[in-house]
Image (cartoon, helix red, strand yellow):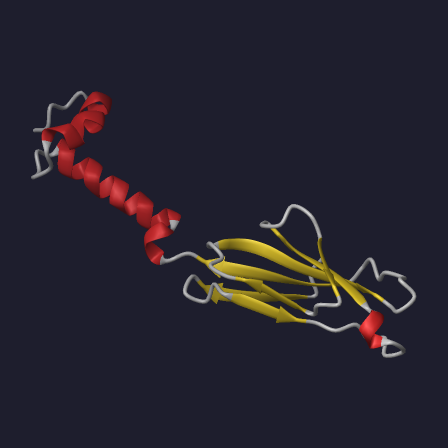
Length: 131
């Protein structure tokens, strides 16, 4: 279960993470691994690098996970996690696409200004030749 949740708009889709292990005995020997569930199939072994970038994330739900090992190579398998939700623009939402679809269907079936080839599917479903 993620520790936190962040909700962002589709315009806020470049994410950067900085992280650190809380073992200061020999911090230059701490190792890190991370992954973005919903994007990365496997853990990314980052070595001593403590930074991750995810540019141009598409709308959806992701979970960023990071884990670290101490200077003795013992991994904290639980690590830390944050859930990220990137909301789509309104024109990619189900309700908008539904409204556009209904509007196009009504325009074709009532003999509106749509071209005949645009109404082919609506005509075949309703048996209405566009009038």
